[in-house]
Length: 88
Image (cartoon, rainbow, N blue to C red; front, top):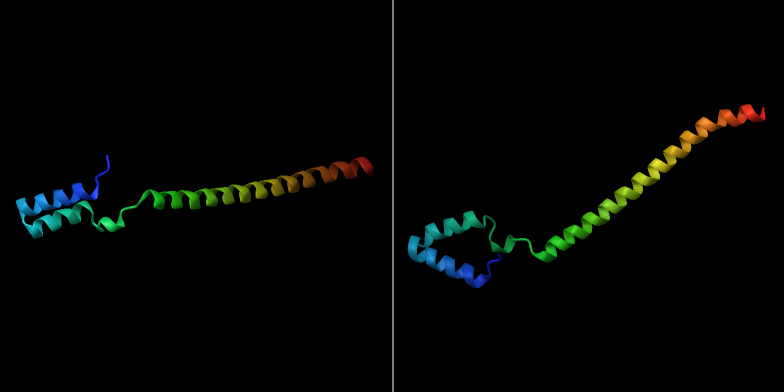
């Protein structure tokens, strides 16, 4: 359940009333150490997801190329003597 700004402000005001300004500020820093402006949004998460997807796609394509070239090299190395023996 997400807390909106109105609920958060009401909580801060109640903390200030109950604890005083400095203890309330200290408690809120513990809850949100970097402040409310440092909380990730859905757009932030979507951007990270898009970058990760692009990175994984790129890594898989690179891995596939490497495996195919390696397998081609192995097949050439194994089959060359066989064909040389059959033709020679």
